[in-house]
Every structure is written in structure tokens, then in C-alpha cells.
Image (cartoon, rainbow, N blue to C red; front, side):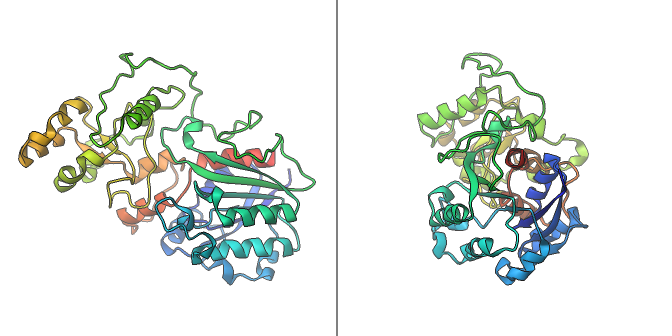
Length: 382
């Protein structure tokens, strides 16, 4: 295949770029575009030879786009207008303006890109912005397929359900039969690019198996929540978290990631607690490390202590006794490197030394899973 020229819009910290590399396609990113100064600094640090345009997409003219002469667009438009916890402003949100501008330009390009891949949050699939995208693709005679996929499909122990769309310009066709339904997994004919580690045979242990039996108790969760988490922990097609963790050595300063006493006392019953043998973790968001509830799992680094024993009758203890009990678990935040590992960023991905911990968590929370996108790119062009 001739080397593809790729335009990376809303490039962030380079998740799409790494996915393109992982797909092993003969391709070159001819330009990356983003306005976030922190993300751009990290992108440039990791991809110093790529043309990075620190500007708004609306600030680029049709001529600017035509000069780039690209064959593929990879894009991850702002998700805030579509998030479940946001205002869901959809196309009325100013942050959607740049995406609508891309749709307006697409039919007017001198050369239609052969391939388009888009990523966004769950919720985009019911938006007016999505409807505008589909209409534009149909008008431009693209074949397309929509997906709702979590990294757990690839054996990665992290839930990050996202909307994806891949499109090919006619007369090209996919290696599978596209459908109007939104797929919740990869088609059977999907190539193997993007798989992570060895294939784990599908095997489910009973809840009483000593290999997987765990004490899980979350005071404010429903029975359905508990059963769902227990089921995830028993799914042996998914790898264990320990495969993605940093080695805790004396010089690794892991104590810096321990939850503060104030956080333990205030949020203990709201936290999603996992340990290294778990096969699950919840989605890490941009607020991780700053907020506790709903921003990502925390790790029980002292595995010799039974979680159930610590939480038993906790509400009957004094504040001092409660803190002593909770401290036995050595609960800590996942490090930025560990979150990067779960999100598929390669070991060579690093942050400039001046990037703060809060900034690292923020940009990772706004990024995507590299392995999922790599597999979709391979599927799109095969």
C-alpha cells in the first residue's frame, strides 16, 4: 500500500498518532491540530518531527486543508457537549462549532479523504451532531460503521466505553458487511492488530473458586452493582491489573500517591477499590487525583488485608479508629504511567518534566485507548 497521508484533528497528547503507529500501516501524520497548550506541549515532546498546528480548526481555511493533501482524518472532537454529566448542549454548545465546520468543509475538499475515524463519548450516538455527521457521510457517498466499544473487548481491565465511527469513501468497501446497527464489539473478520499480550482462553470460574474469590463490599452500592463487579473480576478473558502496574520499589515514591487521611475519612464508602489481582477498573476521567467520586478506581496496595474486614462495622468506630482501619489497606491512586499503560500508550510515551501531576491526570482523562483505535484503523483500511 502507498504511504497514507494522515490529518490528526483534536490531536491531544497523541493517542491517535500512537494508534496509527501500532496499526503498522504505511502512513505519515502530515499535521496535527489542537488548541490545548498543555496537550500540545506533551504531543510535541513525543512527536517532535510532526507538524503541530496550535490553532482552532475554524481558523483553518479550505485552502489550508487542501494544501495538506491528506488521505485519512483521525479525530476526537470535544466530548463535553455530549457527556452524561454535562449540560448536553449538543450542537448548540460552542465547543461543537469546530466539528460542524469540518462537516461543512468535507464535501468542498479538492480530494475527499479515503478514510475517516472518529471517537467520542457514549451519548454522541443520540446527538444531533451525530445525525449531521451521518448525513454528511451519506451525501459524500461514504460507507461507514458505528461502534460502542470498551477496552475490555481486548482483554484490558479498564472500562472506557466510547463511541467510534469508521468510514471509507466509495468505491472502497470494508472487509466486513457494515450494518446500520451500532456494533458493541469488533466484527469477526477484524484483523488482529491492536491485541494486547497473549490470548487468554475463555473460561469462567464459579464465585466460590479460591482463585478468584474476593471480599467486595461497597456500602452505597446496590446488589446489581456488586454482582456486575464480581462478574467482571471472574472474566478470565481479561488480564489482571498487576500486568499494568509499576513495580513498587523503595525509590519509586509510591507513598506520594497514597490517599490523604481527609480523603479516606470523607470518601471511603464512595470509592471504587480494586487490587492487583482484579480484572476490572472504572474509567479514569480528567478529574482523577483531584476528585474521588466517579473519577476512577483506587488501588488497594496492601493485599494482605481483607477489604471486608476493614469495612465491617466501620460506621461504629471513632474517627481515629476508622482512619487506623482504612490506612491498613494502603489505598493509593493509580500513577499516570499506570493509567497510560491501561490506555495502551507505549513505554516510550513520556511527559515533559514541567507537567504537573494534575495536568497529567487531566490530559490522560481526555484521551483515548490506543489499542482500541489501532484495531479500528486496521479494520477500516483492510
